[in-house]
Length: 322
Image (cartoon, rainbow, N blue to C red; front, side, top):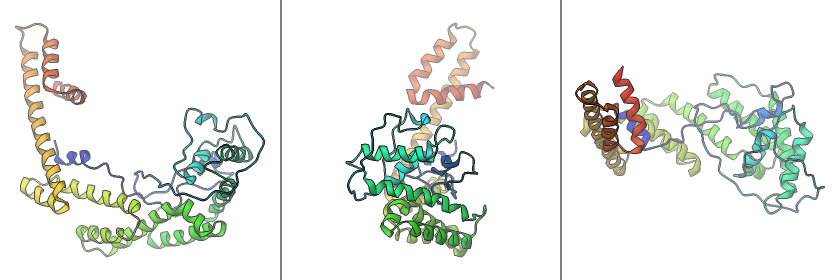
């Protein structure tokens, strides 16, 4: 078993996500599913997930509209809860459920207005106004060309165009409220490409990127810091010499060295136990002097392995029988 598999148990990397356009695509009547494509489906550099940070916003007087008993959510969303992590998440939730076969744009807008009206303690008329401008912003993205394999110049141009379009419809505060995360991630993407072009080694690149990430908000930098650490741990875990691995882990952090060493020892112990089990299992299977072989194997398996290990052991039994 390769040592690199140990890394998975240490860090679930939030990853190096980098939005090249928005977290979504523009409203386009000619595009398949139209506004449904306006939900989270960013052009990303690496296929990992992040979580958008909620940003509080001010409220004004609540809306006053007529009572409507029709469902607020789309039929495909009836068994889900409306995402209210942030105002942007709420907008994207409603857009993700849009289906032109069951509603039009006006019905979508009516659903959002009714939801905002029904939750005056959290939303206001200002939020619905933002949603209408958010739809206009999506439409404006149709004029932007995005290269499939963008270089740093393409990304800088794209970043400038997107920010200009945002400020054409939103104030600076509103731009930060709705687009802050994706704009920052796009900046990190540009910075990463630049550093890769000037770094003399992978170590030099990682060092410079760590320095640059310290200038970004903590919730943004943490995503990329975790990605860097995961990359380093994967590389170190494949070193053959245990002492060399420990020294490399310690360079990341003393607690990392201790934890990784513990995991390596646990994995080695489990490997040895698995080898012993498979040997005993083969002996039972080949022993014609005893009946109830399966029962004996079951007893041995349950005596040696906990519930979490059972599925893995059964897979290894199948492989061992091939």
